Length: 251
Length: 204
Image 1 (tube, rainbow over the protein chains, first blue to last red):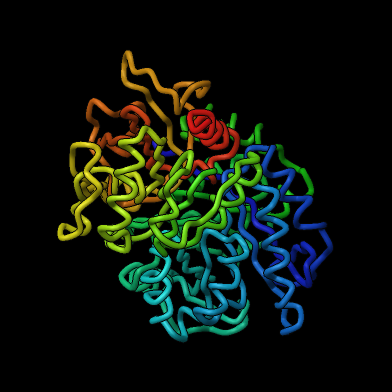
Image 2 (image 1 turned 135 degrees about the vertical axis):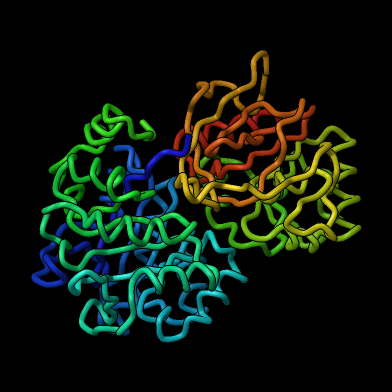
């Protein structure tokens, strides 16, 4: 039976891991390669590196970061943040990324999804969706969560799948950094609407939140950052807890 | 010396890194003639089955020639599917045909949450009585990383099967010194490195 994946995410700025609360108030959390080395032995199933560097100079260091992280792990590695073209994607893939995650660029130029899927296969293309509740709907935000894209998250996920995306990385902006639990309603709505895996993100604070998102949320994978960075929750304990709740995991 | 065949189906970075970590001597041949004298051949691959069309008659003959000479061959992901006679993904593009059978698309079951592509970690289940050099030291039920939509059938060559939803397919095949893995050993942590080590041992 296919295991539910537990994914560790590193938000990287200027080559260093940082973690924000609701996309702000960044605080320093360490060296990406050091963290990756720890994840590789702790039983994390996959690693995501999200580059939140705003400057062009900083972005040039991303390939170096990806290379350093890839050198430490024999796990799937996804890289996102500021990937706007085939050549941006090629740079991080050649540096050792197995998948690229597109966000703003996918909405602005959805043909990029198809171009990358044709070149590297759908399995290499993640479309990241940052969503926020608007009454009973989920609205898509872009530009690091600053701009309302005037799109519905469920509808956009379906289109991304049709255009060749292999996975959806779905972040609840309302929950991001709050440690109050994943947005299961959001995750379930998107997961039921598509036939590709959905990675839930935003709100992980404790083991119960992972149980909830894998059951009520119908998530195929769940991503967290800070709870793994600061070793607040052991990956092994988390997976034992999931297994004890009947959720298939890799132990 | 191991030949890592590049047919432009995605990136070889991870496989190179894994082989390098294991201390294997390897190169990427520029032409099929360079397969002469190698100790092992790896056909990796992610992406579409049609990309194997880059392996033209010259490559096919050279690889078949190595197999006939008893040189170990390992196909990874699409590289394993290519060992079969063909795939539904690209019916006009024949496989190498060193293993009987055709690869088919996983059906999945959206209502039951069984999604395609099959992405993630899943268990290797050896058939009763199967013995495998490739999987030596790998515990039954050990998990490895998959990402694919098509898969090869469970035949007599199957040394580990994997089940997604209600569908069971060949996760690893072995016939003489022809080996194939549907999963990515280079992304499957210690279990994957063990399997690659076992292949390198057979190449010695």
